[in-house]
Length: 359
Image (cartoon, rainbow, N blue to C red):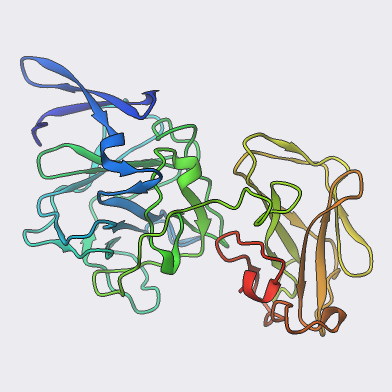
């Protein structure tokens, strides 16, 4: 086992299959270990404590309004007394990590299918949720990697975001935005946070901050099956993921998401409303990436209802989202949002029933 007072050098960007190699330097000797993540997960589901959500700031002027959330997907309550949470910066050497929480208090238990909320002293409560543990000596920032160690110093989980050098799998988790300041482990929300394919880029998505603490309701472990088949994403691997048709300030916008395993060139693609083209696209969208398209002027119908339609360069309809009383089909249209509110797809589901797919 690794000792808590040993100096750890992470080699987290070197993988062989599902093995993560890291080096431990003791005072007079060193050893090389292989950390076998395949023994800790079944399929894409974790059976160990995972980092489930991270928010690195609360927006402009709130650089330390942050939290990190843990989730227990196992069938037993787990005692995590003496565990450690640390961070690596993008520029730091791989052995120069800083402690966020040097040791969780004695008696810290995460109940089965439950969460633990660990937040900075400057954290602003969301939905009146208070943190279970508070820290203030260090804080997370852009391009960091969060590390979770157990009481013996063994690494349990790791997530890097944005341009982090250290991450699991093919790439770091995506870059947060003002509209979606958190990165959250799939599936998310009431479906728990059990996804663990050892790939931060696929296991995490951008999300509105929804922290859960030790007193929050437990959530089941649901196998995170991304909608890449014809039943969920018809025709192509791009979907309309979220849009703002009636902004309180600023412009209308539409967010796209690419489920594909490669970059999609969007030159010549269009976004339309129920009348005609409102934007012609030219950017590329990376695999598992997002693209926000700002619309000039007032394009979408803010009175009654409308549709947002994505077509490829050949004019083929790829995705369509309808809201309000568009075409008089209220039963299956998403509800028209209040001014300043977005319509967001729930867990990427595309059943062609927008009332169920969007909230």
